[in-house]
Length: 202
Image (cartoon, rainbow, N blue to C red):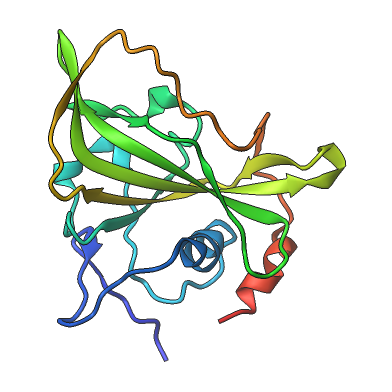
């Protein structure tokens, strides 16, 4: 039986009455991990797009329900990669680790970001929010250092209900979020067998 495909015109098109509301664990271990290790997805429901190539209001989907996209890994660590035509995404909280209910060497990292409109005088924080998920590998031989792997991230973008714009000075010196993990390096060379538990689960 062919895999159900709900991706149309760069966005997600579900039948009436259906909702796509995955948990953090499902996002990381059923979708992003499968994409990273080239395993079949549960359903073709998440389009692929470079989320930083467009402003959030130009992305296809329902901004209140939440738009999900597979995107390249850019922006997971480097703030300079989070620039769009009209502004930029800025991390506003510490990263959160997402662990599988099964014992696995891979861990998900969830970042929360806010979209800022760029201005010559002041940057304006909007009510656009992004949750960006990345995959890291726990290396026990290096004091459990977490090293980012793969070429994909998964992004959920939505408009905060009742949000209001706030002005923030250009010289705001708040650096990127204080990550709850230490990724001294990244690697695209990894053993796909570490994904065995996920690929065999439903």
